[in-house]
Image (cartoon, rainbow, N blue to C red):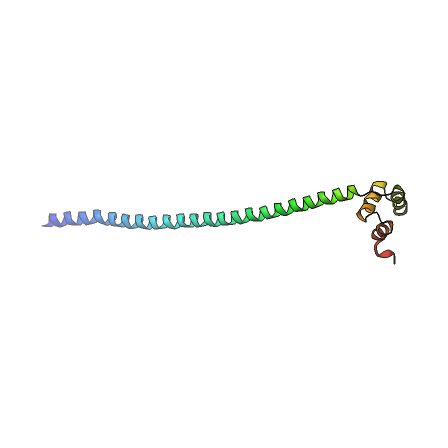
Length: 126
């Protein structure tokens, strides 16, 4: 009987590490599942933020295109406006501007010399 008890004790010793190993493997499996769940959550959050960033960028680009189109339309309007050469000379002389700058100022104010001068001088003129 002593030999049988030794055999039983040996079997128990062999199964105990297997049970402990199975518990450790189960715990490792749970840990791995937590890590993969976290990575998947981070990826989905990252994708959500990425799509928000792309939407915001698309809005900014659309706004920039609109501003560029408006600026082009304004430049076409100003280029179509005709100004008298004498008015350009007067503004260039009085404001000490180059003729090109004086012409632009005059065009921006519809060819009105008085309005262009008042805009350039600001609140100085009453």
